[in-house]
Image (cartoon, rainbow, N blue to C red; front, top):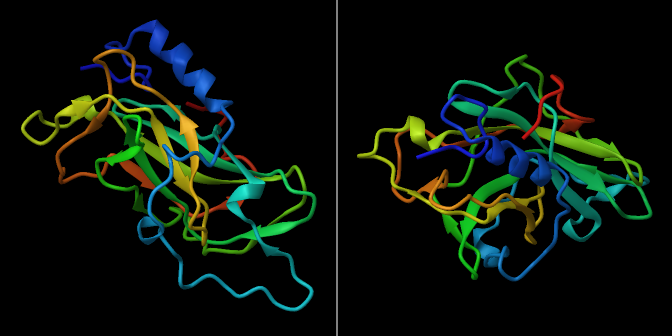
Length: 211
């Protein structure tokens, strides 16, 4: 099995090209990438918008992509989930986005949703106000399924990532398909997470890397 995201010796050069193209892919709220409303994560700790403050960012006014972060490592890719405000007015984001792999024409979820992980620096969550055109990002680690024992993981082809912006119940989609029978997501529940996401922060994830 090969990981189309990681720059390790086992990867083919063509996988890197496909991954880079995915980093600039725009998001859409498509039927194949959407799920039932009950499946959308909600952050009950999100602060309420006060008088005169910007409203929460709606999925319809956000564009999702991958970029930033430290880049490829030995067994995972350290990138960033970017959310750009495509609306005409400022809005706010607070908390953790929901992230999961999807597959098939129906966009069904494959594997477990991303595990939430706090900022290693110890900083707390803060509401991020986005002017029109501005972006925020959440650190996202994508683990190589090939690094997980085969008894725990049976990789299957995937279409990309389904994204729920914080507090929203409508999904966005980032196209990130598997190449042939190469890296996909585990079809079995694993002891270790294969997607790890942090909370949104202003701007691009530091490090200069990307998917």
